[in-house]
Length: 50
Image 1: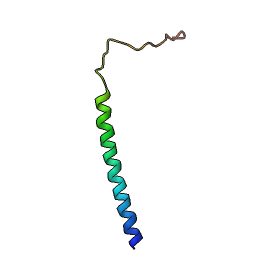
Image 2 (image 1 turned 180 degrees about the horizontal axis):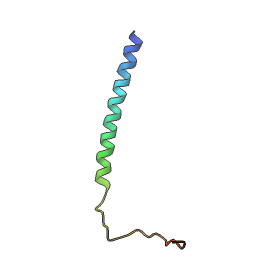
Image 3 (image 1 turned 90 degrees about the vertical axis):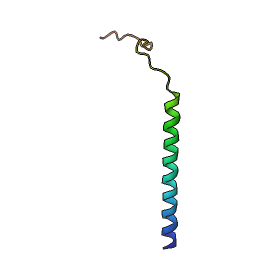
Image 4 (image 1 turned 90 degrees about the horizontal axis):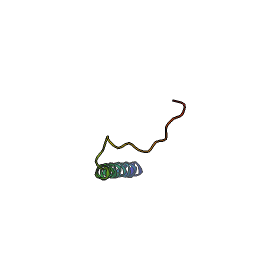
């Protein structure tokens, strides 16, 4: 029974750590995106079959 409680505590701790890491990743990813410009297109070669 003690092993079960230890594993349960470890799983809860890992879940909390994963949630914190996900939030930190989401917050830092939003800051990295620059302003979007719809007037500038990336250089994509034309499709000769189109």
